[in-house]
Image (tube, rainbow, N blue to C red):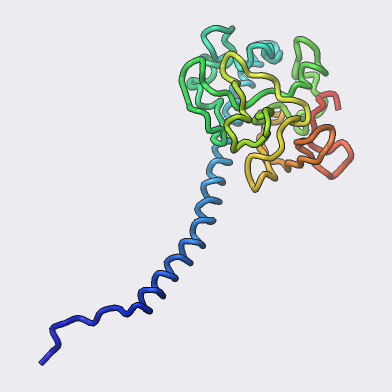
Length: 228
């Protein structure tokens, strides 16, 4: 006669299966985290690309003059409109996926990206982009999180920057101590010729901690000075 009772798993078999599951989970989690970060980096680049296209259209309509820094990005109802709503339909484009502040479609909407302060220091009060010497090598915009501890994963680092208060990006990325992705070694940038690129992030670089740099020369092929 056949045994009507099924064979049960032994304790050892259960432990082995459990151990295999734990090992597989340990291998899968880092892969998932890397994939998630890669997706955020791609979205970050896409945001910068959309802002770049809108800026290009704005400049064509405005004699190639950059918007006044005090009202950047000019997407609130209480400041002179610059990009929103005429050139960009949603405020969400101005928030990086690495910025964990609560999204909004109001004047309190977080603004993660800012213009290189050198555009106003080097080019004057009404900066004309036609004066930029090497557009393909000069940083125009990047994520701006200068508040201590300068870590994009910390909400406090992004400060209170919103549609009515978005300070310029400090030259060298001063205050930023780690990049947005690749273990803090990379950050995305919009250049003055409107291309976007992932560049190295080195917290020990000059002129200030947090500088983005290209170590191929003293100045760097990618740099902050629009007159170089």
